[in-house]
Amino acid sequence: MHTANLGIDIVKIRRIRDLSYKFGEKFLDKCFNEDEIAYIKKQGSKDQTIAGMFSFKETIAKCLGTGFGKDLSFKDIEIRHDHLGRPYGLAKGKEFYISSSHDGDYVVTVGQMKGSDEFLDLSLEDSLYELYKKRPDKSHKGTFGKAMVVGSSKTMLGAGYLSALAALKSGCGYSYHYVFEEDQIFLPLSIKHDEVIVKQGKIVEDAEKMDGILFGPGLAISRNKREVLRQLLLGDHKLVVDADGINMLAENLDQVYAKKAQLILSPHILEFSRLIKEVIPPGERLYQRAIDFAKTYKVVLVLKDSVSLITDGHRTHFINRENSGLATAGSGDVLAGIITSLLAQGYEAYTAAVLGTEIHSLAGLVAARRKSKASMLAGDLIDGLDIVFKKFEER
Image 1: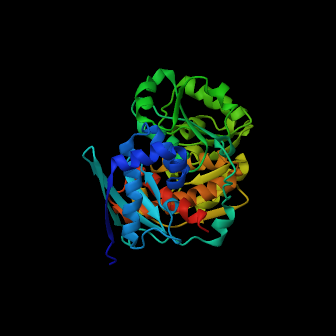
Image 2 (image 1 turned 90 degrees about the vertical axis):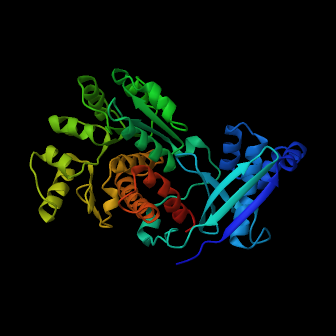
């Protein structure tokens, strides 16, 4: 087993304060990337924060055993934070545990390179790389689209939260989490969310401004919600329907025939059985029924199970990386958020479904390696997206 390298660094906060005052933005631009600068400013551009981020990079350079030079610059090291705000580092294809402490005068940081068994070497097929669109650096938030998640209810706050966060972590420029006034959950979700924008009401009206829409995770069913779904189906939208949204559709499949929206359905096997009014065990008969359903209703179907099937009735794609760690609450909500994000970024529906489900599966491998299959949670899948997208970007 690989023994991780260690690094320790001490920085005098006053030294960083003097450099920052003397060179201003030039100092930040030289040492940090755009996301890191945004984080520093979000924290109030405090001297301790800048010193800590600077020291993290020094620590990681020591972990690598190289120091800074022509083969390693400050910007070659990335300092990121997970969904709980915990820092970690990325550099030279490695990931690093990092932590810090300060006493008002000095910042002390400690880093440890994760072992090679934790930093999973993902093997991606060429066909997956071909599906992925390279992100242009000459861009802005609007370049990567707006994702709308309509989800969560009084007893299922976390479902829509996970979907909206997964959407943002999968590359869309904006992620909006819309909730219904009847559920009275706007305030707790506003506190829970950070980068995601929480909205209440005007769902059908605001949907016209969105590039990808998800309806259903943790939503619960009501007359008002059924009507909103009906109107979304009749609009010219890229629409993913999941969870309770699928249960609403199962009540009246005729509205799927009448739809105008480009529709992706992402049921697990039990939800699919409600749609077709028949229980079919996994196997060839079920898969053929799924293909026929997608062709008949002109939808893209993501049938979730230990082996997942994606089909539009003409093209079919299987994912058979069986991983019991994905059998955890919220896993499907994360998947729906990833697919919606890809739609918002301009991917065609079938491609978004295939690529999104593959990315979700690969993030599951990362999470299982980091946490174990038994202990991994849906939030760990969102953390694993960093490594998966890094793999695509380094191609």
